[in-house]
Length: 234
Length: 234
Image (cartoon, rainbow over all chains, first blue to last red; front, side, top):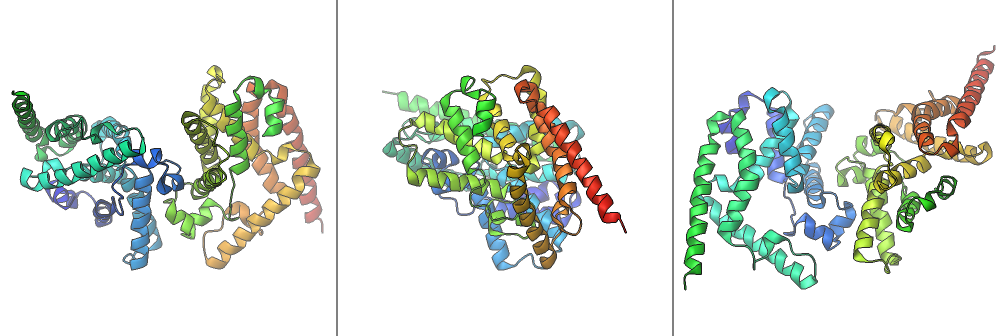
């Protein structure tokens, strides 16, 4: 998020309070994540799913933990009541928007307002930037991105294994018997990351993500093809 | 809700599982209510507001408490997994819809689908019936309704007093210095209850609530006018 703010020169387009909302939301958006997705929480009827009535249990929890810390630490003690309300409403909106079940809804809304996009419509700018940051691992150099990807896959496969053990529906992209690193990456980049980043490029042509990602996806496609070809060799 | 199901012959329009959802939602929709509204929870930054990120904190809590009791008591142990999912989704939808901040949103949706209303669209039927039951105190005989209204006003004025003591914004219809019983009732019936019941009558002409409520509101208008006239006498 910090890098994105500099790259897109958002410091000159938004006021500091909005940058604070974006940075703090990005920092807090996965607080106390238990390593099992919302789908798991709901299917396994966990305490979080019960507490949040199956509605974005994780994101609601991350956000509640964030404000519990912010209030305990009293970091925001110098802001006015109105500023606090603004920060709280903004952070809640940003953190809840990181539920990937809402990805298409938010992307479609972003697409629909693109032609008349106004940075003064701060709410939507903040939401989109936090979402972009959330799924931007693959936009970083491979040496930085890959170790995090390995951690993520480990977390996914752990959930898939638990789902099998408990007799719960197995989340398709978390099933170690069905998913490989390259196939998982190309699907994620093609269907989730690229459509969002492509829209973002229209707003910030300086990012030129489109060309960049097409290169990545083609290179990953090639990688997948090569690996599959290698694997199928007798 | 029980009376409403009989009056509208819903037993022959919905299946028993949907009636169960409606009855249980109505029964549970205010569980563990602390006697202070959502606005108070948010302004006073209570534990419930923190937990639910200012989003319908009370209704989310009522619903979570409901399922905690249902699971502890194991009442639903004989339903299948699919049936349980259906009951849970339905009850969550119904109970969260009782947040009066969403009244106009739900009423407008109901109005928009009226011309093509289909009882097989069970979700919306259930939501509307639970909402109607929730605010139906004034549809009962005065001797039954008035003691509950007195309790409600006591709760409202208690919140208004607390808001004044704590220096929080005072909820207008909870301010004992500004609200009288007749004025509060005519506003509530005219702006919230009547528009919803009028729409319901279109679906269930047997209820004839329209005529009934016009009589009530006129009688209450007269009551208010008489009381105000009496109070203004030297």
